[in-house]
Image 1 (cartoon, rainbow, N blue to C red):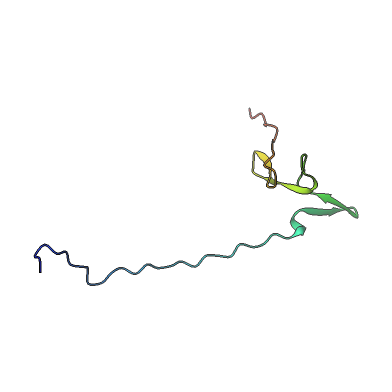
Image 2: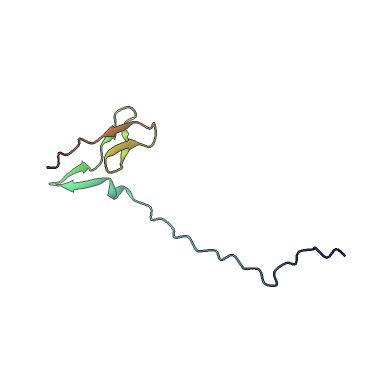
Length: 79
């Protein structure tokens, strides 16, 4: 055989798989709040898609996951 043949390491490092945590499903209760026997929506609805589509809260903006419409929150003046 050839002398330049590379030898494989005796013990190959085993890849350790980390277990993924399952994400908690947010229920409908996270989108609504009850005040004075009335239901109040906590997030705005999409202007393009209609009242059935809530917009996601991304800190400085709201975004619709269905159509991609983005509405920026008013900037706060910090002095």
